[in-house]
Image (tube, rainbow, N blue to C red):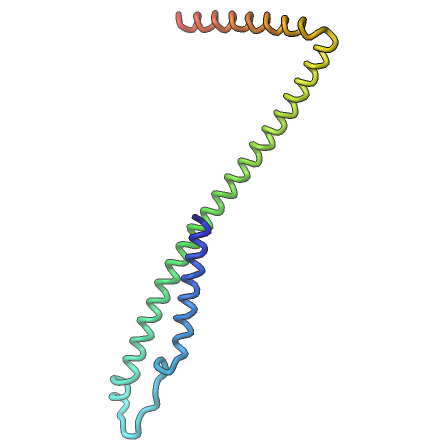
Length: 147
């Protein structure tokens, strides 16, 4: 999406540059007045139409530039939003990485305890504690329902 917008802006920029270069062509230059032409006739037949063409061209370019500025503003806001999102995700990734390290340390400690006390004994203790935790959480849920 963002790449498409950038490509579209680049294409519009090329069109604007082509429009600007187009004004160097002879049709955009004011011809020399003929020998017996009055200033009023020259203005009405040559200068005024050329000035009107320039005004239209300037309006067109200004409109294109306005569209480009709006797109650039939108894309800049999008980039800012994506940067913030990436920063947040990176922070979450680091937090999860730290949590994984701590969990791995706990798992290593459990393996050490199993080696020392015996795997069957440790598994039995864990099962008893799980049942006890389940009993306590069941009683808490029952008490919450009666409130």
